[in-house]
Length: 305
Image 1 (spheres, rainbow, N blue to C red):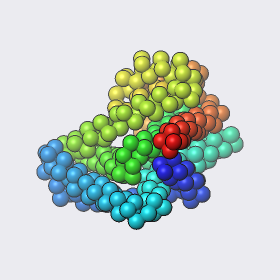
Image 2: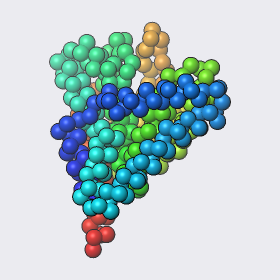
Image 3: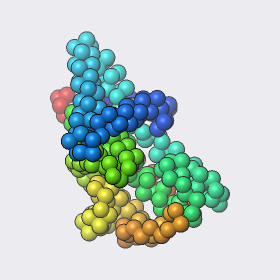
Image 4: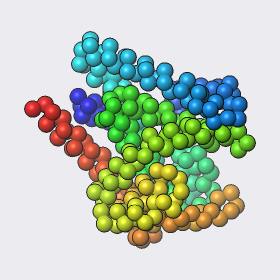
């Protein structure tokens, strides 16, 4: 049933992609802001309480609804699983942005490419040239493929519908509280960031291993082993280092933003990024997803017999 639910959710998401600014996400983010205002007493324990208030009711509700529907009929449980995956995943958003940026760069329309990238990552890209845009797009694409596709799928396979719900809620809280709160109040975000770090620890490494298998295995494994720790952003370094090695390109490096040169660690040992590497990134993500589907199908088939 998990294999069928995943396939149906992917097909549904391809046909009718759910926008990042949809009502459900907006409502949850507003709720997260409300909890921060109510609970933030400049202590990490307050953030832990707020996190539990935000996530645990969602988890319990997801489990209860799934149990009730499963008792009522397998078809209803399948529909619920598809709905949960549809809301928590976002493969179409990644491929859609890649398509727009690739087309704009091929037409040498830098202004459009900057606009699309800026809206995609939520940070203006006015100072980036074509090479920078392509490089940042690949980085963002690899990370979002993990966060919005492979990460939720991993926990769905392990725990059923409650897995992707907790994963997505924890991700949104870590991002919302970690980036929106003023520096002098960031103790509140500590618990949310640490919880998501550990929730994402194993899926990130499974994603990195999948990228290695779906791309250049030797280079991906080498970059993962020698470069990931230097990125210094939890699971991001693992995913980006293995992705860069699998694609045979260089990611990271210097990036001009807000009038300053941001010296980031270099990832990968291949060539500098070109426009065509954007298409190769989409291909890598698709191969990784197909590999997961094949493995899940084989496991489901084995369990059936």
